[in-house]
Length: 560
Image 1: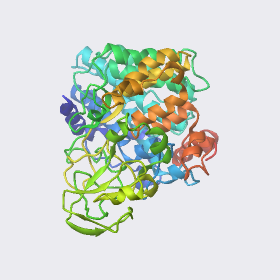
Image 2: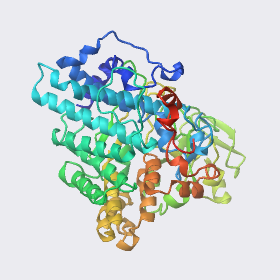
Image 3: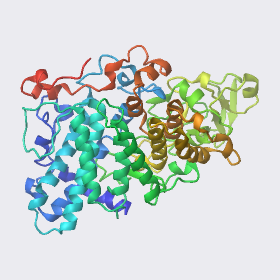
Image 4: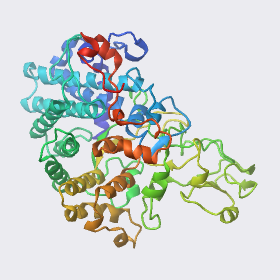
């Protein structure tokens, strides 16, 4: 079933670039043609969507817009870089997201791309919704489900946008041409529309979709949990937002066929994308001819430069190292603690690198010995994640890299997204699915909502299953916590442990209101420049320039 939806999305991709697009993004005709110019790749008319097959294809194709952001470098940059858990590696052109420098402004490519592509997705959804009443030859049930999926996708597009940009152009009807008379709709109204769309979608969707990757009631309730817990922290949050987040999260846990996987490592095992913990995932494919340039690329970004190290070369099993993100000291020393009891460090990080060459090689970082002699297949590098004395390192026939040795090119490697099933050693497009919500996330969101309601004792029941699952056999009881431990400070660390590198951290810190505080405390490179205005991304300047009245009508976010 999963592959079927992937194929539908890929085959329908040509329908994404039709006459809907000019109205989907008001800046599509501006002068930055290398970034924003859309090449029409099909002669299919705008009326195609009005046919039964066109309607079905448009619904499937609308999911494809998720892949323009999620599991791409833009997502890694905007969701993980410049936080307390991750700082910049050696490579990449977007270090301004970590350094919070003045060139992070409305001309930035990622700022523009997210805005552009998700507004295209929104307008595709609007077209599906608006035209559904005029389509003949399609059953009422199919029309109802298609509209529900479009509303759910529209809500997700807006939820992603509002967290980054704040006030938006809230557009819930199809546009067919450039619009220049627009204003920014307050966040409060955007959240209200998101919740309305998700609830209306839930009413018309099945409890569980018959194709993996499509929206269903379970996924809707997972996102409503996230939306309500996020809105609860805003100045306009409703008094019952935490309670609603709690209830929606409990529904996901209790009312569907979901269960925590027994072994944390199984969450990231190849071929296990549809595990019992997955709630909603963006789908990808290894079929490079139909993937449209949007494979899952997260296997690239957390990987150190291992292939230049003594006795080693690049291999498909490990991957192509783009060195974008490296863990902070906070991640090593405060998040990943109790490693003799808590297995999540060992099951999240790649600790052993095997030699691909035979011979004697001078050492690089580990100077406890002058050289190592290895045969291909032997351990060449061991990275325990903690300090080891020089005397102990000297007894090992391989190099031992410890955190005090780490630098921008060599650092702890998060192994959750490695993808050895790619077509070749240097292929950047991966085919693994990318989870937006999994059950471990939901358990901790429910716990957070309970803590915020003063119910710490109840929160323990949603934290301890996560902790027990994380424990090495025989240590489960030692990792359990009590009500006295169930605080927001604990949640800050526990979400980092459980969800490290999975794309939640920047929005988590923003929701908690401590992004600036924690970045200054734990991210040395970011600390000098980050301040409160970085809680929002800049609005694309080209968007502002094309609005009648410019900044007066569609103002830039403060500080940019």
